[in-house]
Length: 167
Image (cartoon, rainbow, N blue to C red; front, top):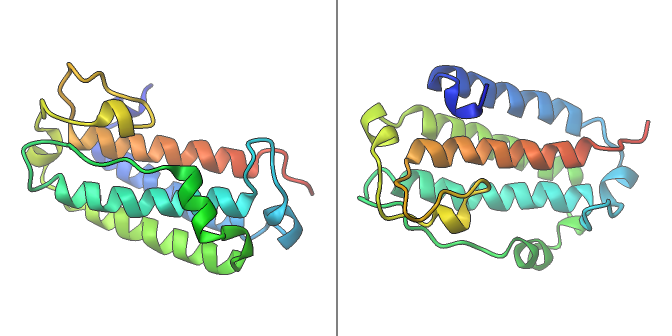
């Protein structure tokens, strides 16, 4: 079953469960585990910071996408954003709290979008450039696709954070 085939209400429940489960698991990681560089080149703090950056960028997309006839949004350089914000120097508990709270707010936002706006095909979009699983430029895209893609991206990076967790 692909994420797109799950009814939207179930998707929202899965999104919430992902946030709540990950928040609890993130709290079990030690300071040493979160600051060490991992196989992907970022520390766990930096990966969570990247997920915060993703939340902030997608928050605007999810709101703006409700009032436009297109899904034409700018991208951002994840490495530059992580580097500029010095996430490895931040407090792990503060990063967890911010990430969790921000994502619970995003859940609230995407839960409130009317179905006709979620599912309206948009011919003009940049999901070929900004989506984790890109949409061909020649195909229409929906706001719902972008929202679901956000969760796929989030889970991908959470898997990286929890990979090879030392006990």
